[in-house]
Image (cartoon, rainbow, N blue to C red; front, side):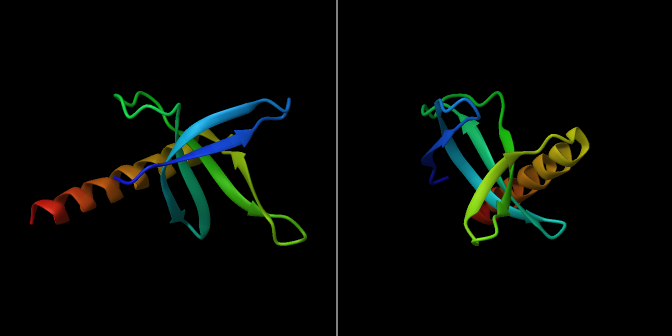
Length: 90
């Protein structure tokens, strides 16, 4: 997987770096799947961010606070990874 480093600014103004794992659409909404940090080591967690647009059309990202939605988006992410892996092995 071709991962890119994304730097986001939190609500306190502090920068945080993430590995961009995937952008996906689920139920008509767009989401980012990010992994904390920059190393490509064993992943233990991901962050699900909803992609929104402001009144000027500029994108901004917001953590998905609803655990049920975050879990469903995460399962979609895993499903896409599985399909990609199956296609590579075919």
